[in-house]
Every structure is written in C-alpha cells, then in structure tokens.
Image (cartoon, rainbow, N blue to C red):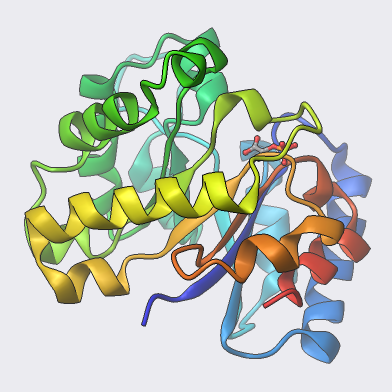
Length: 253
Ligand code: PEP
C-alpha cells in the first residue's frame, strides 16, 4: 500500500514569527487529531527550515521538506542551497520540479534528473512534481507531457531508488487558481502515472508509490479527491498556510 501523505508547500510565504506559529499549530493539532498512518510534511522556505525542524522535534508523522536544492554539492554557486546542507539540518524531503520552478527558473527535465539524483544520494526523499499547462490539457496532451517528465527525470533510477520517490501530479491550470481538477480527471491521470510506473518497475513498486494530487486542494474537496483509488494524498499550496485547513485536509482520508 502506498503511504498516505499530505505535504504543504508554503512557497515564498511567512515571516519568522508566522512560520513558528504555523508549524507549532500543525505539530500540536496533528498529535490530537490526525491518524498516525497519515504523514504530514511542511515544505518551508529555506530560511525557516532549521526553526521548523526544531519545532517538529521527534514527531513520528510530521516531517520537514525543502522546496528546491541545487545540482551541485558545494562550491562557488552564490545564492544556491546544496542537498548535503539540507541533510545536515535533518531535512527529510525536497520538492523538485514544481511548475513555478519550471516556469520562472526554466528548470528542465534533464536538470531535474540531476536534482533527483543528488537528493537521493544525500538520503532525502524527492517529492517530484509533474503536470501539464492549460494549452496542453486543451490539446489533450496531458499524458504525453507527464509521460516525458517522468521518463526524462525519474526513469533512469534503479527500482530501489525509484521506490523512495513521491510523485505529485499537479495540473498547472489548477495551481493557485481555485480551479480544481475533477476527481475523475485526477483519478484518470493518477492511474495513467501508476500504469507507467508499473510498466517500468513492476506491480509492487507501482502499488507502493505515493502519488499526490496538487492544485487548489482544500478541506471542501480533499475527501472526494482522496477517495479516488489512485490518489494517495495531496500537495497543498494556499491551504497549507492555515493550520486548521491543512489539518482538516489531512483528516480527509
Ligand atoms: C502548489 O503550489 O503546489 C499548489 C498545489 O498550490 P495551491 O494548492 O495553492 O493550488
């Protein structure tokens, strides 16, 4: 069975005190309200990682993730953050290939393959984002686009390494727009993704791969989305900035 995961992508939001408050609320509410088989991940801006990691402490189902890392391990790359640095702060997950990174920072599938490798080499787990933009959906090219994102960034991995990857399917037209994919559209793409994984790595790895849905997921639609057989959880943007909403989403299985 794939792990149930609800990951929050805080993006470039929160000041120091906001981050402290939000993370503490999530940790406390999780203890009281969220079943222990649901994994919660807070993917915070780099600058808050250490603080949030300390607040999370030794919780067994709350983890901390970064939103990106660089392709090199150290050196003269001003402004970048390396995977070994994240690891040294006890960071567990790294989001890679978010559509905002692909669009604004021109991250390619090839560069993302290198980032996936470096995250795995440093014993952290990638949350790999894939998804089509609106024009591609309208041209019915979503499978072709997502298929090549997986093929070019992930399918060079051994089965052992691939089994550490979390996939997040995020139709770009649904991110931050309030326009959620219908549960049918989500299920269709998740089943397609699981089918590709099965073809490449076999039934067992495919069944154990967590495939999260992302794109305007909120407490009011999470239950319907998470009820789809191939939706194992969510990558949550806006709603992860409100502890009540984030926790209610995590309780939606
Ligand atoms: C995201 O950015 O990964 C995301 C899913 O955002 P939102 O939930 O705000 O659509």
